[in-house]
Length: 339
Image 1: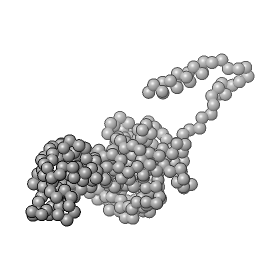
Image 2 (image 1 turned 180 degrees about the vertical axis):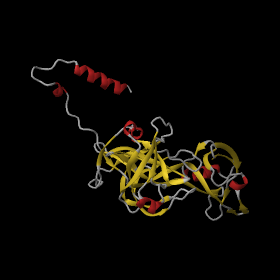
Image 3 (image 1 turned 45 degrees about the vertical axis):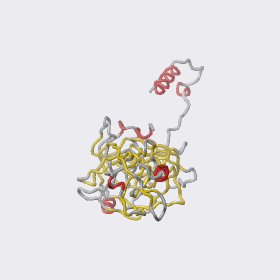
Image 4 (image 1 turned 90 degrees about the vertical axis):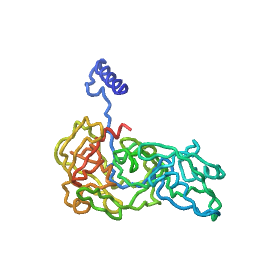
């Protein structure tokens, strides 16, 4: 806000300066080209941290003296996330394995997160007779793969924004970046959306085609720097417009629902809410029969699909209505450009 006020003040001051004789008022200002953005719409694959060692299964540990189930007997459940062992933070599978080896078979205190709460439980790791390593009987993962849609790429800086919303796990816990590289994702199928059930895109990471580097995840999406060598020849350049310029009526989105290149689909903006604090600034309805036939409407993986109206980038798709997959929410682009 301070910076904005400074420039306004500077503009007013310039307007009051005397002009050289014979020079028109318009020559006091240099022509400034409006900022341009490449339209996204391509599907990106990324890796996020689970925020600890997430338990995805419970197992037995075969020791010399028999079968043990340390984690299960200590009350650890599938869906829990192991956050610490004896007060030492656990972020990866390697962290957990190292902590179990340090214990030497002695009792440990395990901190777990379940839902939005944390708790501690005690257990004794058991040495597995086959691997000769201490185990507690859990199957875990420390990263999650996700796909989403790139919204824009700044023509000058190559900064990009994607998704348009926060990234959380099933328990609404925010996730962080685990692997900075973002890859092009090829959409190989679609689970169609239906009333009461969100659909989703099914894709494969194209591992030899990095799109860029992820640097930040926050409430309004995923941000980073795009690869300069990416072929932008098929990408359109547009200017951005504020929420105040949006209106009820026709608009378009760019999404990839097959392969690797986006297509343009017709939608209608049915509501504009500039003051919404949950980043639900638009209610949109898919009107393009092609997209409805292919996906049923808006599906998971389309988050970040750029919304254009009157030739300007005004926002991105963020959510789908479960009771009507042809309808969903969108975020105003100015909120994403502030990151």
